Image (cartoon, rainbow, N blue to C red; front, side):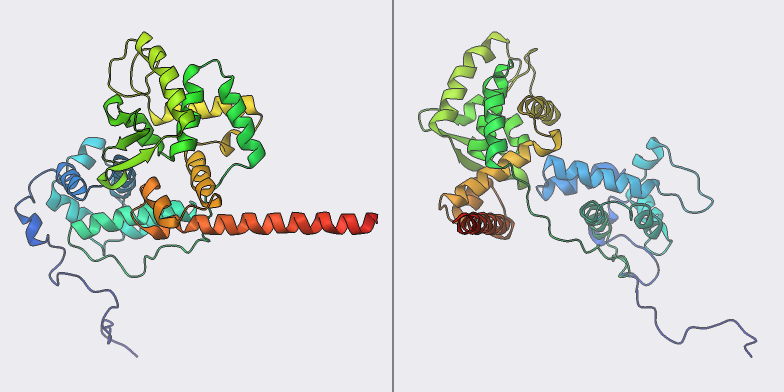
Length: 337
């Protein structure tokens, strides 16, 4: 019978990075008294994180910081964003249970969402010099292939864009389908980056802060040329190719609303048509016409060819569908005879 307090005979599986409790790494000590948000923003910028990645990281991190421990009050926005680097470290101390509660609160989300938010939190903890708890692992999710439109759906979308009352609709669909640009890259594309005579454009500071060349088809050049007089009539207040009726720059949500209207006119579900779906159609179209993976990787601006390789699986699926249809047709003919 035990009369004294229980004493563990084995070391804990999870060890602190610093034995005396959470301590900032030397690179952050001189900034310990500064607001964490500005310091972390500097870190993200120095790593070349894209605007969208930074937004996703901050969203996940703010939810983590706001997660209260039992007995704590909910933080105000000022309290959350005004913490010093040292205060944030103490607040997110890996052993106080806050990380566990936060992970539990997002456990019902899609596996891809959980993975993305855990990656953001992991990045923050590494920046603070802390080791991520070993028991908090990313969920395993089945690999999702990029969604693409069928040939019929693509034909309907092109036709709807061509006859749209909004003159920019046809231009947007054509550019996305013929260049594979990301929606953020299309919104940021400036006139000075476009070379009509060379049928190309320079994407400046794309995802990962990388520049790359995109190529135009003759149809794309025709759409841009037809759009320019309309653009000038809107008295543009910015240098971007795409501008609104009031002359302002297009935003990603503006383009998605345009996609929704085109989907309605084409008679397909709104969720089937997004700028990224058209980017996937661009990539699979190149592959089906015999382009090699390295060329597709460069045109899409993928940092790793592993990201591009997923389109091989889409083409493999397409091949299987064509084969099954051909076999079914052959069987029907034999039955008829």
